[in-house]
Every structure is written in structure tokens, then in C-alpha cells.
Length: 274
Image (cartoon, rainbow, N blue to C red):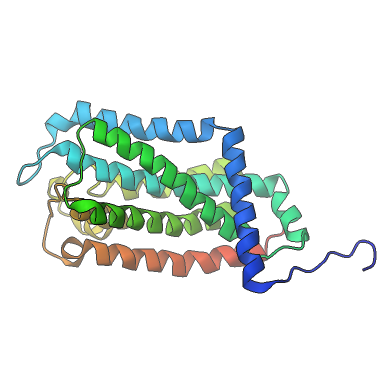
């Protein structure tokens, strides 16, 4: 091999999996070196739990009755999962601006590893935060009631949503040129999704012109799904497909997001020239 020639990656699927895990491990080591990233994410989520459970909880009655805290916590879990895409976007922009992606592309490694490694890291990172949140929720009065199998099914659905949102974040991160712009785009999209939903209030309390959006909102279907799986209060605004089949609708949303944003993210990565 002549000097200056970059070796070509080989090994097919096996190398792609191995390299993806190596990139994920690189991200995990970064969290251990900068622990405040995870700490602030956990504090922010716990803050929402305390604010809504103790400040607003008594002022928000549930149609049909039930514990507001048990109604609230699945919404907090869903919100945390959705906000993960902003963290992904910021991380991707940061890697691009520092030239790390250019370095990875010059190495004899699978081209898919940079993106798949980021998605694997997001799964592990968000799973750890979710466990901490669930323990905190249990301490303030949340519980599940439909068996251990449904508890695992709800966690699995949340992690599938993490994977889908990772690709949204990857695409946003590769499309933006600064960390600030990635944050602004992420929050501009995420805030309406989380607050025009059933995460914090029953859909019946929303204005009639907002309800159709809120009912079909993926945050609403995810929140309804885990409430249904865990036996938590789950009032519906109207009878429609998302309300009657939230798990199926959430899986459809997950498939749509991956089908749209994974190819877009891969294309952005291949055409990256900064």
C-alpha cells in the first residue's frame, strides 16, 4: 500500500456491528468524563415530576377519577424520550464542528458505524435515565398494575421510540451548522409536540380545534400506550383509532419516523462536506 492511501473497510455486517459498538462505547466514555450531561438531564426531568405532581396536580381533575400522579408519570417518561432527539442533534453538530466525523470517515471502518453507534448509545443512555426516572416516580406515588410482562413491554416501546427519535436527531444535527441552531430547531419542534398532547393534561381539557392534532400526536399515542400497558389512568377525548389502539398507532409512528429520517440521515452523512 502506498503512502497516504486510506485502507478500505471490509468485513461486511460483522465489521459494521463491531464498529458500531466501538462508536457507541466512545460516546459512553464521554458521558463518564462529562457526567453533568446526564445529571442535568435527570434533574430537569425530576423537576417536571415535582412541579406537576405537587404544584399543578391538585388543579387538574381527571375524567373518571384516578391518581393524577399515575396519569402524569407516563407523560414525563414520554417527554424525556422525545427530548432525547435534541441531545442527539447537539452531539452530532458538535462532532461535525470538531472534525471528528471527517476523521471517522477517513478510517478503515464501516461507514454505517458512526450513525448506528450513535443510535445504540442513545438507547443505552436513555435506558439509564428512564430507570432513574421510574424510581423517582415510584417514590412520589406512581406504580404499574398489570404485571411484570406489561412493564417490560412499556419499557421496550419507549426504547423503540428512542431509536426512532435518534434518527430524527441525527438528521437535524447533520443539517445544522451550529449547536445553537440545532437546539433552537429541536426545541421549536419538541415543545409543541409535548405540550399539545395528553402528556400533562387530559385531551378533553384542550380546545376542540386542538384535539385532533393532540389525539394523533405521536407523543400522545406513546403516552397512552404506556398508560394502557401499565394500568395507569388513561382518559380519552373521543373514540378514534389512536385512542382505541394507541400501541398500534405508536408502532406505526415509529416505523414512519425510521423510514423517513434514517435514509435522510444517511444521505446527509454521505454528502457531508464542511
